[in-house]
Length: 323
Image (cartoon, rainbow, N blue to C red; front, side, top):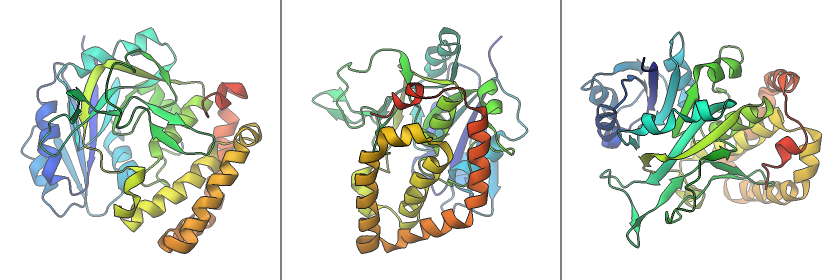
C-alpha cells in the first residue's frame, strides 16, 4: 500500500508563485493530500489555492510559518508529512526517491532532497550551463550562524552522496509521523515562539539532542525561489530581521549546554558582539527581540527543561556538528 502523505503549505501573499507549486503537486507520481493554511493574505492567495484540489484554511491573522503548519497537521493522521513553502516546485518522482531513506536509516526522522535555485518563472537558475544549488541540508557553525549547505554553489555533483546532515531546510522538509509525535511539546511540533525564521534549525538541533537523524537524498529534486539570504538583510522587512535576532538567542537558550557553549565560546563572543553593535547603531527596530525574550523567559525555561530532560546525545555527539 502507498503511504499516506500529507503536504502542508503555509501562505502569506504568495499569489505570484503559488500556482507553480500546486501545479507541480498535481503531477506527483505518489498520491498525496494537500492542505494550505493562508495567513491572512490580501493578494488572493487563498483564491488561487481554491482552484486546485486541495484543502484551504483561511486565517484572520498571520500565525507565521510555525503556527500555520502546526494547525495544518493538528488532528491529521498520516505516515509522512512534507512541509513546503509556496515557492517550491517538486519534481514528479520526489517521493519515490526520498521515501527509501527512512528504511535505509532507521533513526531518520526527517529528510530532504537536492534543492535547486529557481527564478520567478519556475525555471532552474543556471551558471555555466549547470544548475545552482539552494540547499543540501543545514550546516551549523560555532558562531551560531547556520546556512543551507551548498547555497549558491554551481551543482557539479559535489553533494551527490546520501548522508546524514545536521538538519533540513524548512522550505522542503519531509518528516515521519513517529518523529512528529516525539518532537511535540504542549501540542506544538514547530515552536510558535519562533513565528518564522530559524525554526528549521531549532527543530534540527532538538532532533539531534533526542537522537534522531536528518538525511539528505540527492536523487530527490525540487526547485526553490529563495527570498531570504544573509546578504539581502537590508532588503528584508524589519519584522523578519527582528525575529531573526530573537530566534538566534531563543534557539540557544533552549538547546545549548555548558559543554557546547565552551566549544563555541570564542566564536559566539565575536559574533554576538558584532550583532549587538549592529543593532544599536543600524537596526534599532530589532531591539524588540530582547524584550520579547525577557517576557517569555519562564516559558523558555520550561521548554529548555523539557528538552534537556529527554536528550539522548551529549558531548561530541552534538559538538561535532558545530564547525
